[in-house]
View 1 (cartoon, rainbow, N blue to C red):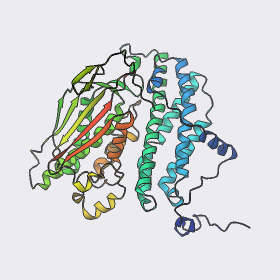
View 2 (view 1 turned 90 degrees about the vertical axis):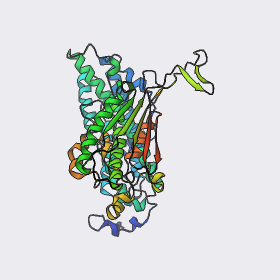
View 3 (view 1 turned 90 degrees about the horizontal axis):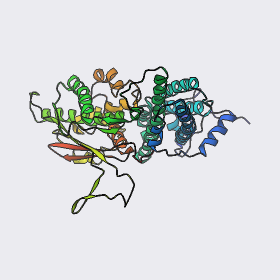
View 4 (view 1 turned 60 degrees about the horizontal axis):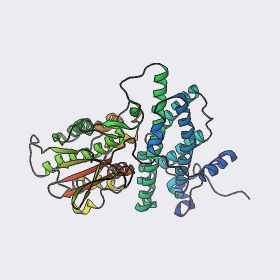
Length: 456
């Protein structure tokens, strides 16, 4: 007897009885027997956490042998991580999995897994060049994964609890950061090997500068760059922008992933700029000429040579422990934008997928400036690459100004994602609100020196 199930193309999917069962888990699209076996095989292989310094060691120095070893690791590791995302998407309720945005993401992850899991062994530099181009294409294909699936979850919010959405997105974003770091590190290494083979080596450039980690990342320079863009966006959409003030130790540098810093700073500055302008307007001040500044204070990395005790600094003895003591750079972003209403304070780091509809109806002022988070630094999740020529503003530059800061609000993943980025290597991001006056955001980032014992 044939099944009586009617496909969604012949009958509106909202009529099918399976859509009313929230416990139904979505079955993947039919695969060949080989692909099904491949998925099952990799599902049994857990990801292998790799120290960041091990990845960076492939570039010290960048040679034909080291790049081939790196390619072997990437081909072995990335399918292990991608299959987890495929299975996580498989396990979503049927009605959520049939959402076009979620379905698009699922197919993309499945395709990427299949491509890498079946990719032939890389045995020569020519083959590695082709593999590096393949990785670049995959990175570009996944440029908008998080905004896409966030939109899908927004449309399906009635079928997923906020707790499940948060858990799913936390794992997805965390896994995605790792995949991009591994892929882009190999892309950068491949580029360095090609340049050496062509004799285009910069004698002043250290091998530690190859890859996604910059050993001399300048937070002040990044603040100026991010603020310049946010200033332009703010003036175009709100008619004014507050001045920027940088104090502290502005000439300090530290080792970190630049695109991560750019993402975090763009999100925080965007909220501070908007909050300042709107709070100034709410106070009834017609002139926007004397807006209070957004002040960014930079504290240099704490010395790893001592720790703080109740009696003050205490020198660490190498005979007690040889474990490297992590050091952290701290950035404080202070604004006079009125702070966060107490009713919203507990939710500002949550994925607020239903905010946009309500704000469009009742007006954004009711929720306060932090209730509606915009596209902003989400471009860091897009086409920008720590190993490429892009920058964090790739996505916004194309449509941010014409759309406007207010009307593109609603996905609400900006601040929670910024916090995830800060926490990825053991840092933190905290917001302290002085309601009625302003807010301070403290960003603590761990220095990724060569001996940093962080894992991906």
